[in-house]
Image 1 (spheres, helix red, strand yellow):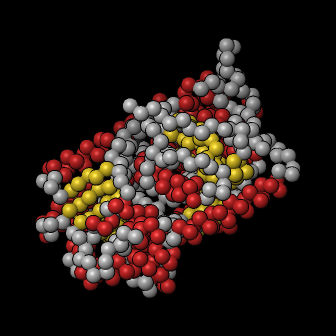
Image 2 (tube, one colour; image 1 turned 180 degrees about the vertical axis):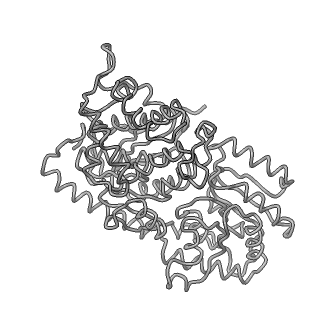
Length: 533
């Protein structure tokens, strides 16, 4: 068994940029992780530190990406492990610290403001919550667990819930929500020094970045690829650990989710809005995401679109000859996880195979993130008798596979602006995608000038194997249509999605933020981080 590589540890060295990441680089491949790796590696003139938030100790395994030399420091924390075992501020042999009534009253007032006016959260509200979470006067986990005032607050909140809701389930839901926040408060109190803090999501990472920036006065940036709150809503609609049988009162929800699910969703929305209120600038990938961020409370003057970009030159080298026939191979590049809806792809392949006997479906991506789902997908392949045409290739380099395929496909139920589609475009491979995220924009164009380039593939509804198969057969069975789509894909990626443009824009953003920090350093911050430089 390989030993875990030693992560760089220089917490006292001030980096140019501290990236705050949740469940991505360097422990998860693909998607946002690829973008983070791209950002760090292609901006070698900047130094980085990284705060990584995972779920449980030991789950992430070994780093999946090499750590470049311009990364000075990486620290790893676990939301569902560290909080339960780390020392509590003020706790010791004398028993749990008794917090003052004023702090619990302030905590209740802040929660009331979050509930009563959730769309108009101010930086002052974020300051108040930061004070309660960080530093010597912060509330801590032992306060929540043992202090009578905490018990009074939970009972008062429970009284506002629908009659009949089981109190034990309510209590443990509230405790589960808050426990990671105490860990985040401790991380923020001793955050690594940086000139700029940049969270690549909202949620826990976004709120951690907000607390660090509010304590130290450093510029704070947020980039969202997928919308975190939307993804948590999808997750919460499927989880089994929220007890529906004890939660029969629907609180007016039309989609059948119970009150506790609604409580969790409101919690994540609050984290997102507090993150937005604290950020100096907020970046997103396309107009659809920007509209969702506005609806979720992001101030319009902070928002800016910076699309993804790929190394066009790298993939240009593997393009097929202009007169080549498209191979009857459908390639899905992505993790084998439920959000990618691999099962719909497999079911579609049964239909494609019946009409194109030589067709194959290849899956290129890691299979170890959700072993139970991977096993279910492989059993589905067997049950549909597709073992000879559906292949699980594991993780690999897409440029090694693109010359052998006719379509680059995604069957996802949620996406942001998928890099794999853009990489396929650069290799001249049209895409077949579901109508999620910016996928329609990538296929059909973002504006009039972009649409004039042509259609670079096809867009189908989610969870529709029949429509997916029909579109695939239509493209693979019509050589002229395929070549038109290939030409449109190449023109679109070369004009709008070259990584040089994306990196130049983020480089400018960082330089402006660093210059702003240089001005701030001339004045002492009101409550600096312990190691702030």
